[in-house]
Length: 271
Image 1 (spheres, rainbow, N blue to C red):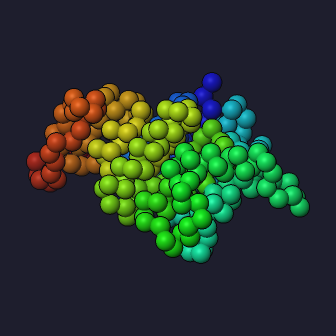
Image 2: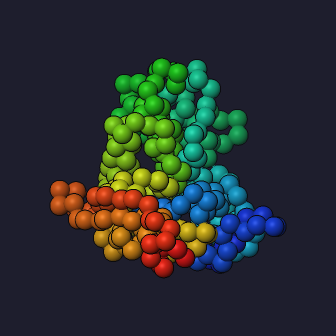
Image 3: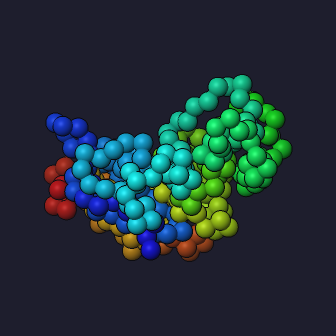
């Protein structure tokens, strides 16, 4: 059974709907990449799937029940979400940040329990941060900092992770470090990971399934080898791209690209 899906979702404002009548199902235990031009509704959709924002109409379904039926702590036990540019006080210790992920399991007036300590330790190990547990956030590199926030979501022990552009502002080395970490978590812990990415080659390389949005609608969805094509890139992103199979990475990759001359752009790209 699909764990997370959206039924007839309308999301936006009274004068402007960003997403209208969207129906979508996310496959279990895969890395799903949300791709699309700026303003296509990727982050907006992620916020609704996490429960941080309510749709104007329609329903998010989690494990066969409307997401609104879940109490906040129970929802957090099922879905962990990491927004763009997550923030915490700079003097926060890495271990304390990760411990915040256990809030969904704590009872009033009770501190961390033995099972919480185990979950925190496991999250630190999974994110390769055990040796930095007593470091302050201010002393971390960009990649280490992002791994600390990912470890916080891992401590929630939820089956679904939602991440909004987790590689933004990182250099290429740290981008690959984060994406390989998520790939490892998916393979070893079988988590469903839904991630917004702007780098299309990284999306094709690291995601098992792609959902391509444009103007609030799903234009394409499927495995990268099914939908990551020159035609899709022309129609959705307005770029003239050459796509070829990368035998070493076993995925399609953009090998060259340019903008279309407005007079020469194919009809499909101008829609």
